[in-house]
Length: 315
Image (cartoon, rainbow, N blue to C red; front, side, top):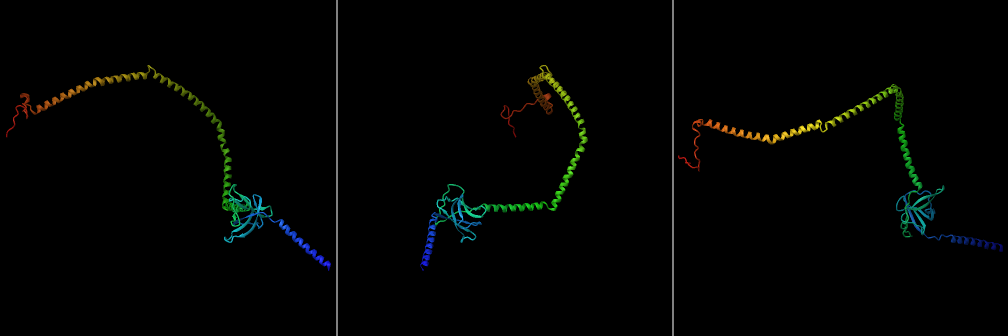
């Protein structure tokens, strides 16, 4: 009976000691770090991300993922709630992306910042800070891969179109034409053989033509020298040009004398002849009107009004 009671007391003491050890361990290992609440709202897929996943700021662990739920207000939108240590440099320009650990595929939240010196993002229990989520490396690779696949499909379609039966016939015809053109070009040297054989004689003729052109140049130079000497002789003081200039000067002097002396005399003689002709014309008109004036003379002219001897006519 005493052995049983002793064993019972020993068991109870052992259990109590174990519970006390566990409680002390939990108390000693409790997390005393103060954290601030943040959240990420996204419509992107988040494969491999689970609650209690690590939150890192530029590689340093600063918090954990508390909860992943669907947004009750917006269908299809995911809310990721984070708890980040106070003092972490979470600013208004901080953004999040998904990172993956090695080859295990376990995801974590990677925080980064576009620039330094931005204002801190305030967060507390009443006001939860919101951090935007940007596509991670896998998302970018997926989008690029889809784009590359689309381009590859387009290229494949174009290659298939290029290698159609009609295009193959066209390409084969082009190669045939190239072969014919190559054969024609190969026959050109044979056709040019006689022409090449005549080239030495042609070169000799060109040399003779060059010699003849040189002689012609010498003759032209001698002719130019003769023309120069002729021009010099014409322009000499006693040359023909100066003599011709003297004759022209004499002629101009004679013309000036005619204009200054002879022409005025001729003009006066002409005026006197015109006056004499007018007198003869008046005499002839008077004789024609009164031929008796040759015997009796001209009749007396009756005085006019206001002259002596004027008598007014009577009715």
